[in-house]
Image 1 (spheres, helix red, strand yellow):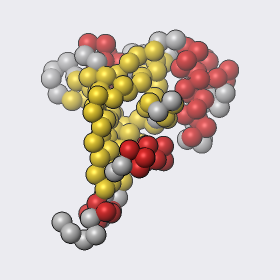
Image 2: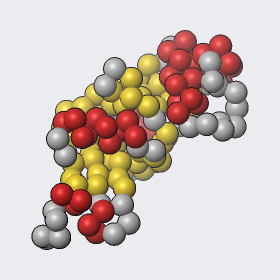
Image 3: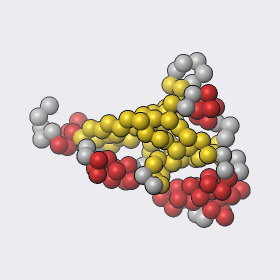
Image 4: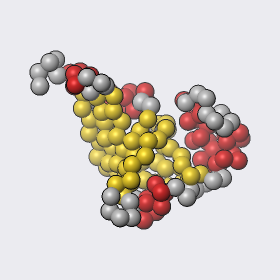
Amino acid sequence: MTSKEQKQFLNEGWTLQVATNGPAGFPHLAAMWYVIIDGIVHFTTFGKSQKILNLQRDGHITAMLETGQRYEELRGLVIRGTGQLDMDPQTTASVMSVVANKYQGMPIPTETPEAAMPAATKRVTVRILPEQIYSWDHTKLGGRY
């Protein structure tokens, strides 16, 4: 994918597969809802979650977004980088409100930063600072594999 196509793919994507390095050396995978703010992937999670514990110990993170069911439809993008943690509840409430407006029907009211604040005090924002991005788009192969 071109850089422009990658940005569009991320903006339109739904569930991001996020991997951090677990304490026993195995990847810890989690599916996360996310948003793009200022060109950077952001998501929130509980401050005591395994993802956060892993990132505090080792900041490396890999995220993958993919789509397609048949081989000729497969498209995907991987971001490898550093997970930057932001513990500020105001920031997290703001991110939570953007997430809530992307993913309608959240189980708790978070459509505005004010509504998200009670939940935000228990959560952390993660920004994925990319070091490497790569992608694939089988729709461009034209049947040639």
